[in-house]
Image 1 (cartoon, helix red, strand yellow):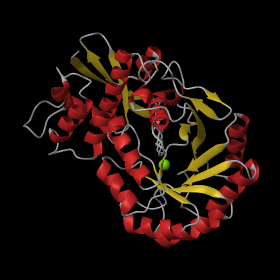
Image 2 (cartoon, rainbow, N blue to C red):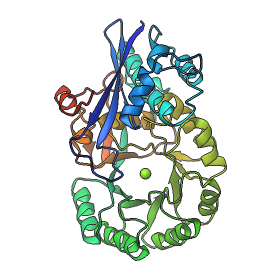
Image 3 (tube, protein in one colour):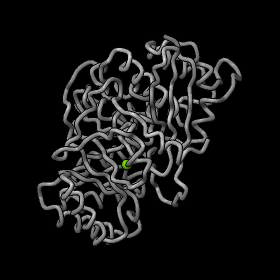
Image 4 (cartoon, protein in one colour):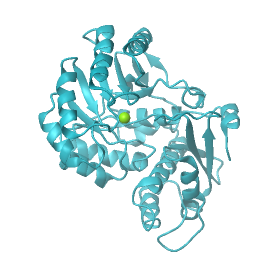
Length: 371
Ligand code: MG
């Protein structure tokens, strides 16, 4: 079997608002083979930049586009292909958009392998640790406590037993930051898990002060309270904050995650499978965390492709325990995948079909396609 083409599809809603919402656009990758099997992946980057990383013609041995590297290759050579993609882009890669784009291509190769072998991807990762995974509802923090409470109530009604609110107004006013969390906790009661994603907004002392205040409302983890490069700040915070500190969605490549663990003291690593280097790299990151008795919760705020990939990863590693499920109403998040991952009693059932076990809705692709 040989790879014959890498197709990139840029999706974008007609109206994109000024907010930190990754479900307003996406970059889908389809890896085609000479046997007619097509692998599907999703890239979480600026879509036109990721498309350029695939389409770029050969410049020199360490600067080329990914299509040039993959055409004619056996998709089962997944580690060798990953290594080639890394080295043949090293002048302009190593992290950022190149690693993001490699991630989606890698995801598609795992999908191909599963389809050829007629097995779900999690089984190829080396074993089944779980097939029913508690999911947490993940949403942007609204502007007012009453809106936050109403959202929380809706998630409860849908069966979620854990939820995360993030970004939005957080960081503008400490009083409001506390009122928002207080309103959510008083709505959901003591049993439901609550996570807060601060969205990179605080300095070290503010983050520690807020962590202590949030502990009064039993916040299970505090996510990205500091800028991603403030590893010294993360180390201080992890040492002193009462709850778990989570981070990792901004990073690509296992060395960045090693630094988060060893220099930042991060409690919960959050590799995004469309950014970190794909399933191949995420498995290495997960075991690096496992060696340090640390958990992994993959970040996912795109379409059902990312959700499915995360479900397979968490099913196939020892130190996964929950899944992020975006509550965004964007049709890219809601409708792009024709067989959405199903939720029962707050748990996602890992797709059992071959590969990632999902199919695209071609009408949605046509409606939002930009290229
Ligand atoms: Mg986050």
